[in-house]
Image (cartoon, rainbow, N blue to C red):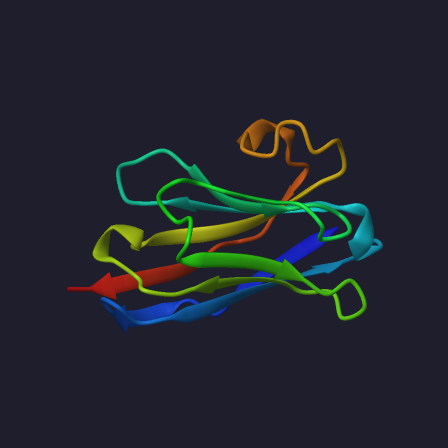
Length: 124
């Protein structure tokens, strides 16, 4: 299973970006999908997650109301729409796939597969 994240870049504060993550190798709909981020010198942290069918989502408090995670099981990618970006959103963003339950989606250890990361830089 391979995950390919894309869509990062440089944006000014208040701007928007949309990240994408494509999963290859297995049926996309079998995975809970998550987005995490890691800023320089900090631990990787949870950003958002979406259930297999897309009917459940979860967000970190720091991004709630600004970021939206979505998926289209017919087309494969999972998306992270990021609006009203702030300098503190600057990080490398990783997508991850989880074959287990929805219960612990905020934890990095439950995810089975990880993408390579895409860098987001928000200037003030």
